[in-house]
Image (cartoon, rainbow, N blue to C red; front, side, top):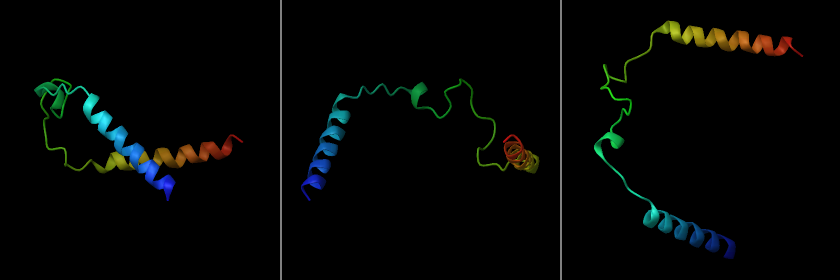
Length: 71
């Protein structure tokens, strides 16, 4: 029980120290979702084309086959 209390106290103290000492430089460029300098073209929730999923699955399949061939 003492260990749990000590761990909780230390974690709370470290959290408070972090909140007090952190430098907050929040300006519009830094907090924007894209830091690369251009606005997004489309909605990010669009689905990928099925060929990307197929290529990824084929890569995993052949990668695992090569891994078993080497030993």
